[in-house]
Length: 190
Image (cartoon, rainbow, N blue to C red; front, top):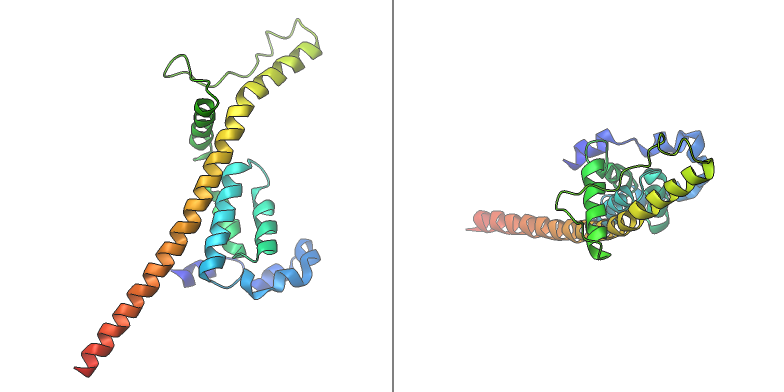
């Protein structure tokens, strides 16, 4: 599976030839950015999931920059930002909004209440542009606080879980491989 993933990702040489990445220079050549290791892969996936959930735009540059600085697996960090995509974006953000709303102590009056609706332009057409701007700001702050808090919690918990899960799976895989080799050696000697 690792070999298949490596064929899907761009090669180091291809990335070094890209003009807009040349400014990274020797930092991009560091071998730990490209090598599959337990720590590097776990950290890369955790960074990608964190920024993929937390930031709605420019996720890849943030994850890639931090992966380069922390020497995490760069392709894993970039690929795992795609945890939020057009299919998962709505449910993730709605769930994060509801979580933030519950933590802030703003329980909804009705069980099936939806987030506050965007200010209607027709209703503000008679008012000034300032009234429309104030209504927009009220809407953003009403939705923004619970959403930002919920996204921060979901992104942090998900990143920690991914990091621990990758470490655990890696350790189990190594142990199973050792046991298999021991059994094979034992069968050959007996």
